[in-house]
Amino acid sequence: MIARPHDLLLLAGGGPWEATLPDWARASLAACPWAVVRRGPRPPGLIPIGVRGPSRAQRHAALVPSLAVIRRVPPEALRPHPRLTHRAATLSAVARVLDGVAVWGPTGGVGFELATGHPATHAGSDLDVLIRTPYRWDQAEATRLAEAFATLPGRVDCQLETPRGGVNLVEWSRTSGLVMVRTPHGPQLVTDPWDPA
Image (cartoon, rainbow, N blue to C red; front, side, top):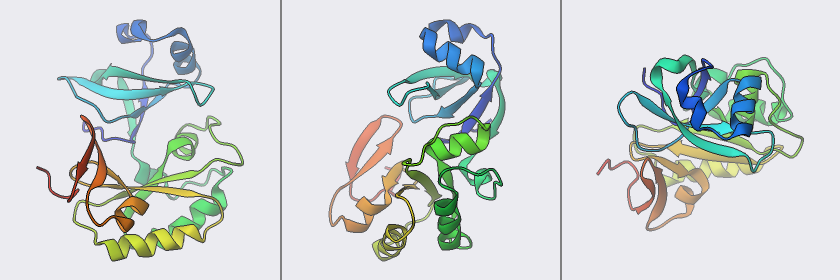
């Protein structure tokens, strides 16, 4: 199974890997057995994940055996989701901007809530969006999208997923030199996020 950053994973409980988790993370997975794939090194047979707790400060990085994954839900599978969230109006507006233009989907709390049905957002929550960009996006296109998102109801935080890693849409639209890319080995400053180096 190929699990990519921001994919949500439904996990089987009771595995020995859970013994290394803090008590709150085990309790959180018992209540809602979902985790998000994070960027990080991937030892054979293991997937780097993040476990969400009830508070924003409770996030835990772990490795889960790929055999413990029951189901994988990528962000783009959550676009036509009927379940309402506090950001339903913003999600619909983003769909009007991006549908037919790019492969995209919600991530963060909104994506987690849509995939799991478990409350993870509030009225002030941002809408995090991922756009798959396997091929180079010029900055004019990034600027057009950033300006469109700035007019929507609610704040949209958009990340471009490039061959090198994740790049913030607004940062890419404004940069004239180095841009920060989130990679499995940490953040890197590069001139071209589409150069796999």
